[in-house]
Amino acid sequence: MVSILKNPILRTPETHMETTMEIHVPDIGDFKSVDVIEVLVKPGDSVAAEQSLITVESDKATMEIPSPQAGIVRELRVKSGDKVSEGSLILLLELANAAGTPATPASAPAAGAAQANPSGATGASGAPATTAVAATAAAPAATAVAALPAAAQGTAPGSAPAASAAVSAPAPAPAPASAATGLPHASPSVRKFARELGVDLGRVSGTGPKGRIVQEDVQSFVKAELVRASAGNRAESSAPGGSVGGLSLLPWPKVDFARFGPIDVQPLSRIKKISGANLARNWVVIPHVTNNDEADITELEAFRVELNRENAKSGPKLTLLAFIVKACVAALKRYPDFNASLDGESLVYKRYYHIGFAADTPNGLVVPVIRDADRKGIFEIAEETATLSAKARDGKLGGADMQGGTFSISSLGGIGGTSFTPIINAPEVAILGVSKSVTRPQWDGTAFQPRLMLPLSLSYDHRVIDGAAGARFNAYLTQVLADMRRTLL
Ligand code: CAO
Image (cartoon, rainbow, N blue to C red; front, side, top):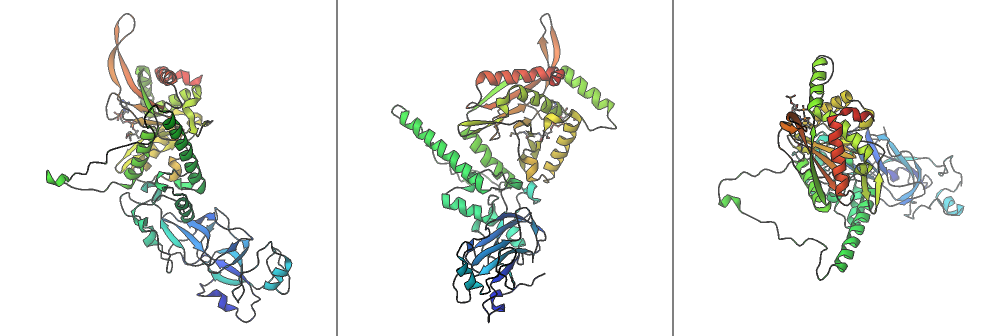
């Protein structure tokens, strides 16, 4: 372990020849073995003192580790995905010389290199062959991770994120003022990038590990906004005599409720804040249409009950949801538009079938994802939904458990209702709402028969899916659920 040097360069004052400094991870509090999620420099880069070198992430915080000195990066000793702890070697830095002149960039002529290293000799890496000086990077700036549902962070939703308090690096750079109140999950450099572009990270979906927002997400967001703005402008300029771009809304009513009776004010849980922002965006941006249909699941339910009786001791409980997942995969295969996403003016067709299902938890709604549902049997899907639901209720879902969905199901059938309008889980283009099945008389051509009917409410994005396609998808789904042998086709 290399000790932390208060002023590492003072270790070699006389010669000015020892210009290469090892930069190590400084004291990052109690965290051991944290992930390097970004390497912000490359060999040959000139860095200023305090410029960030890498970003590391624990399960509670992201921190950028800045350079203690100005210089040129000679060799990187970490890469994205590595795990580091206090004292881990980050890189070799060729220092600005003792007179304060910046070190010569790698691409500069040899004479420049000789100035920093009169011997002119270089090591195997091309770094000047000088004695390396060990140094510890300056104290990292810690930022609370707050965009993920608390489940993904192992923190109780609603409780203040502990990150900035937990990282006790010496004299940390001040965390942003909002760190304790729920920042989106992004590294400081991505935050800076977003700030420069004027992007509100709360509106950006993260595609990085654990739902982290990466630079590409910010770029995609800006692209999508530009496309939308230009579409709005086009519509506006072609609207006869009136503006259609932008919403002109009344301000939200501000009422002093206490004037009318006793009240109790509770802050929204973190999951509710995050899912609420997503739901509002999806509801406003996506033109939803909901198609309602009914599936006759009389035989399916009898089959399910029979299988559960047979496997009462050995297998997992077979739920209706597991059969619905399988039936949806069959319908998605037949109608691939429903397994696609809009990307600007293109449609991205996904050749995988990752099915999300809404799970009601004490802290709000989460949508865990069953990956590759097309390759799994009903028992496996039932087992997985049970495991994921339990994790969701216990607040233990990880970011990866909720990513990559291609289509979602929201089942309220165990509770009640006859139909509802589920909100599409962007960037997906459709979602199936399932209500409570009831036995009702159905006309079979000669007589009324008691049949168990399952209400299905399919919301779809009308920009991608036409009404006829929506009706076909739902009708096919009812056929599959009425006769699951169709999933074999
Ligand atoms: N019709 C009638 N009964 C149904 C049914 C349906 N469509 N679906 C399930 N049931 C019954 C089951 O038969 C079971 O009854 P028994 O205990 O007598 O066997 C009971 O309801 C519980 O069903 P289950 O164990 O299969 O669980 P589930 O599939 O209903 O629910 C889950 C699992 C995770 C979807 C559920 O716990 C949940 O969170 N639902 C809420 C989802 C939600 O909030 N959606 C709204 C999102 S949009 O705001």
